[in-house]
Length: 167
Image (cartoon, rainbow, N blue to C red; front, side):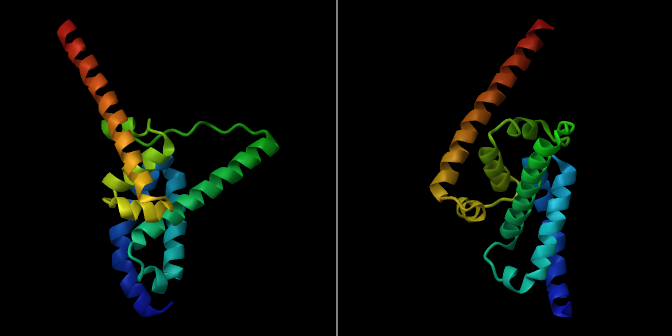
C-alpha cells in the first residue's frame, strides 16, 4: 500500500469509523452485523481511497457501502433460512438512550434518515445523495418522523405525569 494513502486515510478513519458504526448499529439494531459491515466498508474505502477521498462526503459513501453490505447479508440469510428452514434467534437491539429506543420504532427509511441527520449531522442534500433518493423525499420523511416522534414522546410524558399523580 502506498504510504501517502495510509497517512491520509488514517486520520479520516479515526474520525469517521465510530460515527458510521454507531449510525449503522442504530439503523440495523444489530451491533455485530453493523461492525462487520462497517469494517468491510472501510476496507473498500481504503482500497479506493484515491477516488473516495475526492468525494464530497466520503463518510456518506462509506455508510452507504456498509448499509449495502448489511442488506446483502440480510438477503442471503433470508434465502438460507428459507432453503434450510432454520430458525435464527431474534435480533436484540443495542442498548441506547430512551430517545433512540423510540426512533427504532420508526419505519426503516424514516429511522435511517433520522439517524443520518442527527447522528451523522448530514444535511438533507447529503442524505439524499447517500441514499440515492430525492431531497424532497428526505424532507418529507424527516417531517413525518418528527411528527410521529413528537406524538409518541408526548404520550409518554402524559403517561408519566399520570403515574406521578397516582403516587
